[in-house]
Amino acid sequence: MAEPLLLRWQGLLRPADLVLQRLEWLSGGVLVLLLTGLPLFTRGGLSLVIAAVALLWLLWSLCSPPEEIGTISGWLLLILGIAVLTTGFSPVPMAAAKGLLKLLSYLSVYALIRKLLACNPAWWDRLLAGLLSGGLLSSVLALRQLYASTEELASWADPNSISTGTIRIYGPLGNPNLLAGYLLPLLPLAAVALLRWKGIGSRLFAGTTLILGVAATVWTYSRGGWIGMLAGLATLMLLLILRTTRHWPPIWRRLLPLAVLLLAAALLTVAATKLEPIRTRVASLLAGRGDSSNNFRINVWLAAIDMVQDRPWLGIGPGNAAFNSVYPLYQQPKFNALSAYSVPLELLVEMGLPGLIAGLGLLWSALQRGLRGLTLPQPAAGAVLASLAAITGLLSQGITDTIFFRPEVQLIGWFCLATLAAQPSEA
Image 1 (cartoon, rainbow, N blue to C red):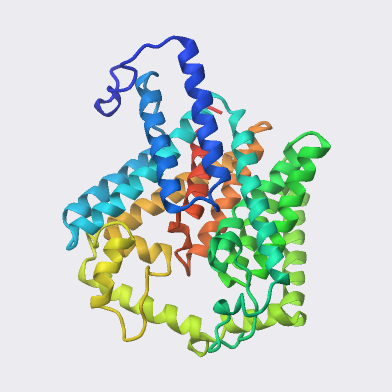
Image 2 (image 1 turned 180 degrees about the horizontal axis):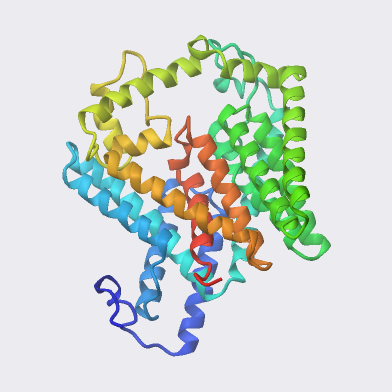
């Protein structure tokens, strides 16, 4: 059967096996460097590493035969096609072209991780070790700020919020919401590493990262980060219970997950009503426009909805540069914004209804692939379930924030998607 035209450029070179082996190790090494240094790279340094990733994927694809595209990659290609179309019809095409270039660069990271994992699944643990190393370092640096002067952290204490006076840590990323967004997908991955890895040293590393990561996320006092952390860890716990009990009698398979969820809900209720810092942040979440942060987001959402109503089918083009060029025409006075503060709304603004539909299709495909981890053999099952839980956490935070579009967070999402996409279709 002839290969699709889209894939016929692959496999044009026929190098020796030794060259392919070196390409694998070079690609793996660059990806480990990238994932480890996510919270530490400058924007220029990150761009250079991502450019190296793109070149390695291109070279490796030229040296290897075409592979099946797969459903997740197919949805990503559709999103890319829509992004190209919206860039062409954008009211600010030059700004949208910058966003399209960023999307292409991030997709190259996804493509190389997928190719590496499909070639050798053992690389998943090495890439994960790099991710957790960066997360552990970030957590330590952030938690040290608890002993810093309050003046140093005062820039993130909102005097107009009902939670005024709350000291929020931000670590090497300079923003508590961004730190929480970066750490929350690492927590289910660290939990699975704790169960999956052998040896005291490896498990101690994973367990320490998990504990310090949870502590750092809590002390960011990021409401979206808290929601994402709870959603990710709860999803992982539920998936592991379902997998463990799949051969149990039917009544216990139904009762045990329900009992665990009820117990967790009871503990959260107690924490939200009895612990003062948590109660204050929960109260601010329920305050509506009475909280300055909520009021700001509501005004930005209303302006973004106006943008969608004017361009519902093709949007304004991808990327924050396009948003920053168009949003001032719709913003309310004194409510400047860098994004729509909601991932679904951002997709609507940038790529219209087709972009949102393609995003939902990608989510559905990822969910289907992730749930297969309930029946996959180990160790593939742990990687798949952890990735699905991490994506759930990111999506939960993304309902009211767009931290996901920052590369420190987005590239972890591509790592999780590549993990799901790299599983064999017949597995």
